[in-house]
Image (cartoon, rainbow, N blue to C red; front, side, top):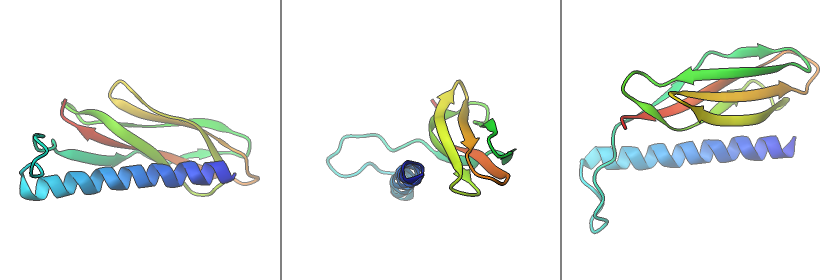
Length: 118
């Protein structure tokens, strides 16, 4: 259970840092002085629908990037710490998350994705 919490917190931290960096770059429209990098492309963060997992149930949550964009990162959200996520990865233009409810009551899981133009 502790590993799930750490994984969830790490995912949130990575998403937050990436979004904050993209926002800072977009606000000026200019690369940082001296870094020689081009401005970052526009990023969009989306969340899919929650799927319900019965106790002991395994399910896959997905969210798709809109046309002309592709996943550059992603993660998940749950309604409780009883969801054990086994996979969280890009699959084509989708972000998929596979999880198992290890609790004794129904819980929910949903995928989140950050998309950008290629």
